Length: 156
Image (cartoon, rainbow, N blue to C red):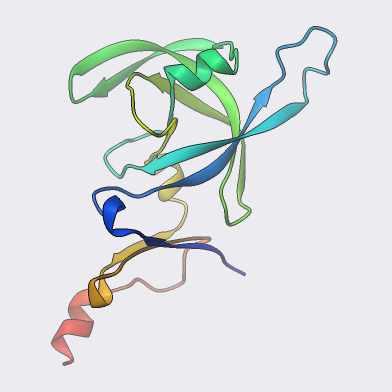
C-alpha cells in the first residue's frame, strides 16, 4: 500500500515546492512527560540538493528546542557548525518519521523546514507540468518499477 502526496502548485509558487507538514517537538515545560510531543504546523520546502532535512533557527527558537549535539553542514556559503535537534516529522500522506535528526539553518524564508534526501530517498517523486499546471507527487514506499520519461517520449 502506498501513501502519496499530490500537490497542484499555484502559478505564483512554480519556483519551489512548499507545503504544510506537522513537526512534533518536546514540550519545554518542567513536569511534562519527556517522551511526549506536541504537533506544530509548519511549511516545508522540498530540496533535492540537501543531503539531510533541516529546521530553521526561528522555529527552533520559538519552540524552545534543545540541541543534542553540534554538527557541520556544508551549504552554498560554505561550511558551518550548527545545532542539531531531534524532532518528529509528519507528512500530509500520514507518514511519520520519529526522532529525526535535523540541523539548523538560517534564513528569513516563508518555510521552517527543509525536506532533504534523507526523506526523499525513501520513496518516489515526480514533478510534472501537463497543460501548464505544475503538479508535485511523492509516495512512500517506492514502486517496484522506475518511471522512465524517455520511454514515454520514444514511443510516440
